[in-house]
Image 1 (cartoon, helix red, strand yellow):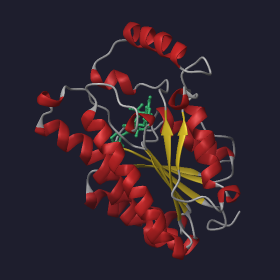
Image 2 (cartoon, helix red, strand yellow):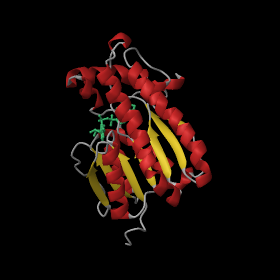
Image 3 (cartoon, protein in one colour):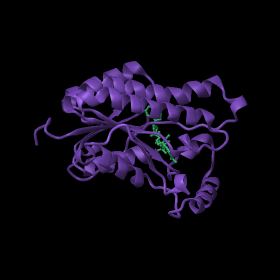
Image 4 (spheres, rainbow, N blue to C red):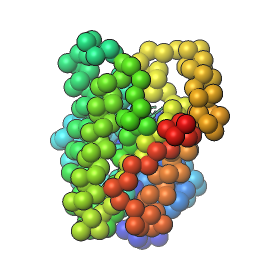
Length: 247
Ligand code: NAI
């Protein structure tokens, strides 16, 4: 296999959860996988899959630039950018702290924009695709998540703007809006296993399809958008959430 012949997909936040499922799925679909995370990455990819992990905090513009330069030196091209890395916080509006604002907007919004800016030159050369991970909560929030919802709303607006600006260069930009997915994200706000299991049981009944999502449900949508089957799809906000938005 020629090194530059295989299409290359970058997935941020690929150490676990939705990002890891996206990396595994895109690897199985034949992409060379570039996995970025600030946490260590353990692999579970299809045999024969070309992949490399890079430690990178997407909030840090210098690290992002350095990492993307290294990716281009190692792989020679970038065809797909999955801006998945994100952080979740809960707090009533009046108790939203400056530290939380900086962190949530810093990773979700500034990180996504910084990654995109660093990769866009290579994506134009490959006529590639950007997939941003937003959330179904952006249009159906519950109390205490205003900051997270503001960040995801910004990502969706950014995705539309990317689609318009980059379409003439042949680059597509879309967002996937997951419903509740079984990952460790909710542990990051201090919930324990028993509470999370009870919440999943409760929410499963609220989804018309009778369950919450699995990371592979989102990876399947991302893989479709990343493929040439989605050649005429850009600027789309694609909910993948078991039907709750229409129930
Ligand atoms: P997770 O918390 O399990 O994984 C997030 C990954 O991103 C971790 O590996 C973490 O180390 C990495 N990460 C965080 N900040 C980073 C940074 N500054 N630089 C590099 N890597 C960083 O989260 P999960 O559930 O897999 O979520 C992935 C995306 O999906 C996020 O954008 C999240 O907002 C979104 N989402 C998740 C939902 C869910 O129910 N789990 C629902 C809707 C959207």
